[in-house]
Amino acid sequence: MGVTPLELARVAAIAADGKKATDICLIDLTSASDVCDYFLICTGQNQRLVDSVVDEVEEKVRVNCDEKPLSIEGRAEGTWVLMDFGSVVVHVFTPETRDYFRLEKLWGDAPRVELGL
Image (cartoon, rainbow, N blue to C red; front, side, top):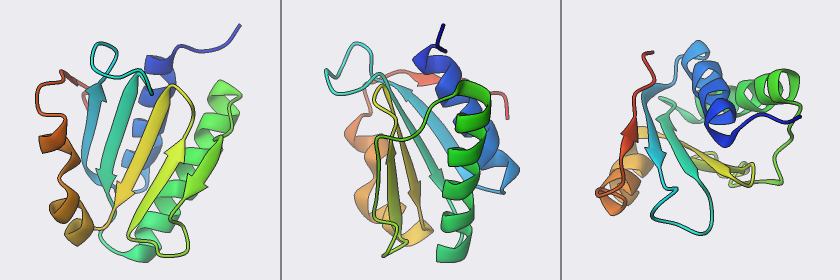
């Protein structure tokens, strides 16, 4: 019995928050995308913090949801790391890279999920 995509996304968000990620945003793509159900977007203030957030999300999702990412991309550059959990994609940005790509604007019509963090 696995966890739902929303439960996995919440565990990832709590993990990111625990490592001091900022501007954590969960976007519900269930009606907008065939690729995944949720985007979790957050910011780490520098490359070291981005790396720390990625490690924490990977660990907490593994422990609490028994799930591992299908892939992790961008780790070497450290300015935008994408963690693909299948139904949930986690994006961890540095501030400059997040401002540049503005994923929230791209998916502006999709509903946001209140996380209460």
